[in-house]
Length: 163
Image 1 (cartoon, rainbow, N blue to C red):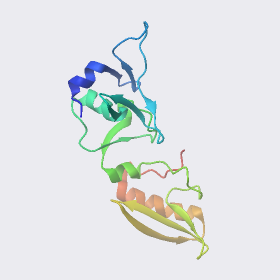
Image 2: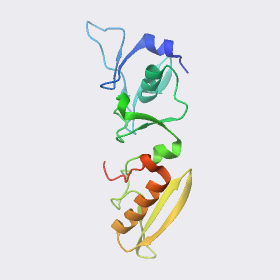
Image 3: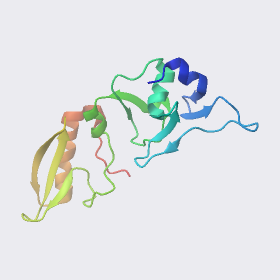
Image 4: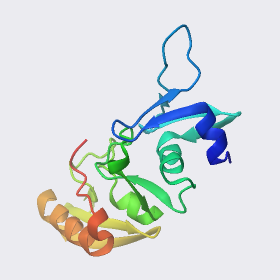
């Protein structure tokens, strides 16, 4: 991995806006850094290696690489303002994730159990799937998911309904 010095020579970071620019001007103006990957994170290629800009923001702000994952408080992986970033375990980061685009129930942690004809609630904690019961409505299953999320993830809990 690159050092703080190597990154700070190449890039400027504005913690208020979360925007990175190249230090080298090209044709009289500064260029923004990064492209958005398939998961919505901004990335940049430096010294032949791909880096997430939220991790570079942490490095440039605190002078060291984050020990854990870097979580986006608002769930927007392209929002790299420093006030929107916090260190998190992998499980906490997943707990704050938005509802998947592939989700068909409309609620995070809720799926239709065809054989039983009921809504099933479940939550993933530390890579273990926990069954939270079967419910007559998707809304009731979502309530069960949200209660478990608050229990396991605390301030990282996200009901996941914002897309």
